[in-house]
Image 1 (cartoon, rainbow, N blue to C red):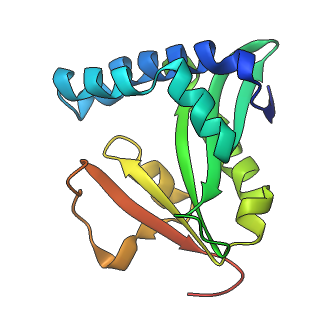
Image 2: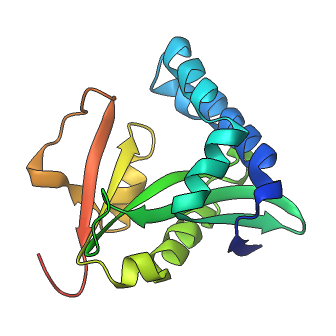
Length: 159
């Protein structure tokens, strides 16, 4: 398994990977309607757009994309960043691939310049991110109006 930067030709495969993961893994925590709304947003065009302003990565097994993730500025900030679109195909979950994707994102220049990294975490992935050192933003332990937890990690020894 290796991780590389996203290329525009990857958009279809990444969109399909996200749809499969949402429908298989996240369905345990979200309604079918919610999942399908997310699938309808996370199209190949949307993925290509997100990759245009973030540093988007894909995890590959041989040439097959099995995971993805992105990091970008938090609302245009130079000192804060945010993680986005972190998914691993269901059959590859639990093998450390998600952790390797997050670690790659945390080595990216957007992470290295940041004093804080935020992630809008799904109910499904919240505990995964907490194991990687992310904690509830401002101590808020409830999901927001988007049904996401807001988690953050301070870097450079700040808190």
